[in-house]
Each structure stands twice: as structure tokens, then as C-alpha cells.
Length: 341
Image 1 (tube, helix red, strand yellow):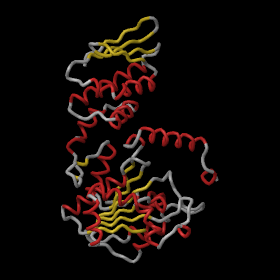
Image 2: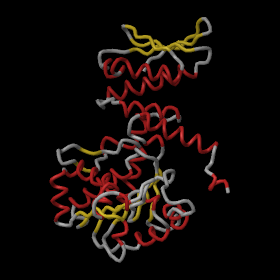
Image 3: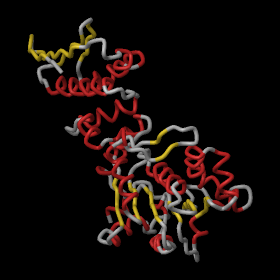
Image 4: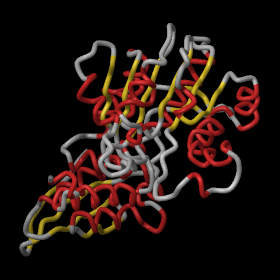
């Protein structure tokens, strides 16, 4: 794309031409929010003109270069026919800050051709980031996969979607979703209802993912037939599961003993996916995390894969990335006492 960079009065300017092949409303965002975000992030001013955009920066041209590079990627994305939503703009920006071209990466990765499955209403589910693409491919190629990363990276949702697709393809006969019922500041005994009613809130994220992919009625029907099980981790003890797709969610809240128990439930023709976020451990102080220990114990075992999703793979609201980044920065400067000792 043609660009012109010049300096004048100690300021740096760069122009980016626009033609009718680019929908300016999509490029600029609602109320020009995309442009405002780029201005704030890189300390530049973006001026709209009839023939394109003028980017104005200070004495350093670094901010102008970054802003121009992001806008070029956004324009190319629109010209390729992709929808330029808020999540994609954020991903383009994150990649640019790491010196990576979104369009070059996605072309190499062929994200637009990678379909996990179709939802109950016919919508194709695709990985939205390179990290998610690698996670999907690892699940396809390994019998046991650990998906480790912060909130919002799609660890659980993608695992459920892969399980549904494996069931539809008749690769497995059952889908089993498990979670440890660990109290995050609350005690199960004080919650109203019987045992199932007490643990259901802990399993709700798994139900939500199932309903989104399969549809509520289909998911409930398969659950009634016991083709799908959504259970607390404790219910897994003593079982051997053949021809099943087994997911352990929130695995950072397992003990090493529970993790070993879970992994040894795997039978013939089964696939296991373990998901967790090691920065959000709710175990009592002094208790070791089974997920943290499994990384050390199993890292050299053949056919077991570890996929590490990162902040750049977060596909929730942009503020989620900022929250994760702020906490990471704080804890690096102020490690918890039990980590210092």
C-alpha cells in the first residue's frame, strides 16, 4: 500500500490513501472508536481526509509507524472480506506490538479454513488466534493435551467444541466433562439444596459451552441418555472410560493426587483434554496444584501435549486483557508470600 512519511515542525506525518474498496465505517468503528483507540495507544493524531488518512506524531516516528502498520493491516483485512470486529482489531494490535503481521500470520496459519465444528444453528466455529489454532491441532494429534492459559483464551470452549465434533464423527461414544468443586471463598455446605444443586453452579460454564455448540434441547437429551456427563471430579474415581472424550476443566484446583486419579481413568479409544489457569488457584494455602505439578512430571512423556495460550489469545472484551496484564505486572513486582518463602 502506498505511503508517504515526512517531517515538519518537529512532527512526523504519514499518509495512508483510501479508496472505495474499503468501508470507512467498518475501518473507523462506531463513533470512530477504532481510530480513537489507536491514537490513545500510540500518542498520535489521525486526521480523516477525502483521499485517506493523515497520521501525525511527535518527534519520534515510532508511534506513527505502529499506528500506520495497524491501519494497513485493518484495511487489508477488510479487503479480504473478513469482518473487522472489536476482537479482531485488538488481536491485530497485539500482534503488531510484538512485531507480527496479522494478515501474514493468518495466511500462513489459514485460520479462515480451519473449522472446529458447526453449532446447532449452522454457524462454523473457527479458532480466532494462532494460539487457538495450535491448540486445536494439538488436540487432534495427541491423546492427552493440557491447555494452559489465562481467562478468555477459549480453553474450555474449544475443548467442548472438539468433543462434540469427535462425537458427531463417531470417533467417541461419550463426552465427559468434569470440574473440581473447590470453594472460591465459599463453602459448599452452606449453600442451599441437595448435593447436585450444590455442585451445579461449579459446572455451569461447562453446560453453557455445551448449550452454545449443541443447542440446549439436544444437549439435555444426550445428557438424559448418559451420552454426555457433566460431573464433579470426585465422581470420576474408580471408573475406566473407553471410547470417550474426557475434559477436566479448572484443573489448577486439583491436588496432585486428584490429577493422577483423573488421568488414569483414560481407557482405550479415549482422548483427554485438561484445561486450567495457573494464575487463579483457589486451593487452600499450602496445597499443591495438580496442574502445576503435572507440567513438571509429564512434560517429557510422548503423546502428551502442553499448549500454552497467552494474553494475546484472549478473545473477550479488551478490558479482560488489560486486567490480566495489570495483575501479571503487579504480581511480578509483589510476589505472594508463599512464593517468596
